[in-house]
Length: 328
Image (cartoon, rainbow, N blue to C red; front, side, top):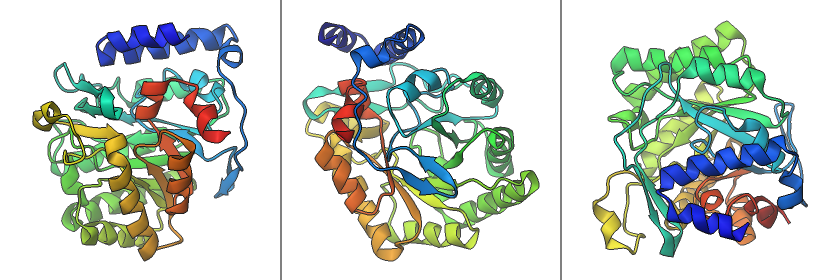
């Protein structure tokens, strides 16, 4: 198994990512996952809005953009899986290469740009799944959508995934779609939240609605969003998306690469934001994500106010065994 992971690391990152997930699916279909990957867990369940998460560890959006691997990921022992980001129409994303490894710090820079097969494809994959793992769906807007059309994109995705999503995440924080982070500004997020609130009432969606935040915004901007989330009776935040800050990346070659930085260099920045939100509001649900590689990182996210924790980059670097490593 170690030789296989070594082989994947020799391949271009996006190719390795795809092949690894396809291989995981083969293991799942052959009932081999429990044989090769320990599923021993000692974490406690978490209950929110009558949804029971069997443990507090989940997969962040971006690993399975199209819902192709829900069953395999669910079989690894995660308490929840978040798919997406999904947009109304399929789109190829940004030009390749668009994922870059920085192995010395177990970091990645990606500028994928919401590459996905569209919301209708995702919904069909969700309908076909066998796993009963708690499923979140992360929604966004197509690259060429601006103004009212961008809001309509979110509403379209929300409406279509609402019958199948245990929770829905509003992604306003990817650095890889032009102007998307402008949705952190009041004049932009209030119309979006208003439209989604109307959609929620129309479809009678009662499950959690979360907002995924950037770690690069000013504290007053984040707290303004937190207040709006409460005003609209949404449920929580995901802290955080990737960063465009390169100060913690030691490899200078990455400082000129556009995209979002994840992995170990993101840990302190995302955890500091968690703590700031906790100081302001202890009640809002927080999912902590960013640089979680070991049980100490996992516990620190929880101690900083996270109700749940997600991983992405550590899964890519360490493979499926990271689940039992964090939960033992």
